[in-house]
Image (tube, rainbow, N blue to C red):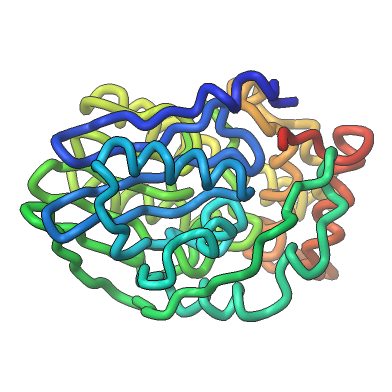
Length: 313
């Protein structure tokens, strides 16, 4: 379980002149990273945060670092609450950019309408309303703020979700990867595709970034650290797909196969996600008689941990 004291160590880090990463240790459930790119035309954010208090802390840090420059746009990397629920705290003039599936997800029922029971303690979502993207991007678009060119890309297929966007700064060679990249935290593809997540890692490598801001975990700096992280993630995803193959072949359910998680990955935070990822892998591989259901997957994850999944609010 995350330590509440750790979360309050969140800080804004300058990666290059005008380019900042908001890093929230320890990066577990609902504790995401975000970004801010400031130029003479204002600030472009990459994501917001889950709760009002976390988003307010992020926005206060950005305001201090940018002398109160106006926030002109925010790019939501995907639909999940830890990257979007803080949208409603942005100025009304801020343009919200996201994939069409992110817009559809925030227009439909969200955790704000039906608070989830999968985690404990309950998420403090009071005072928040869903604010979906008003500009949608299915392929790519480019934003400019002063000297900063901000490219927004979609892989072209489901990965972490069906609507993942990543943000690339070509001059600075900085990649804001969203939840296509985790470091030290178990990746999740319940709402996407494990094979797609592997393809996305291969795609991100082609940009040859010098700095990667993952959706969760510390900033990755330098080719060695980036390669290590990407190789570990790819190995995990391949391992889950292999476990699913074995489970389907032998008729063992996902919850049983979760016990075979390689020890390499047991030390990662949120290791209970193995069973969630296995549910997605069974669906991807068309397991006979298997019907994918999100609530069933989370019920198995709760069985694995012996109750609601611990999180830090």
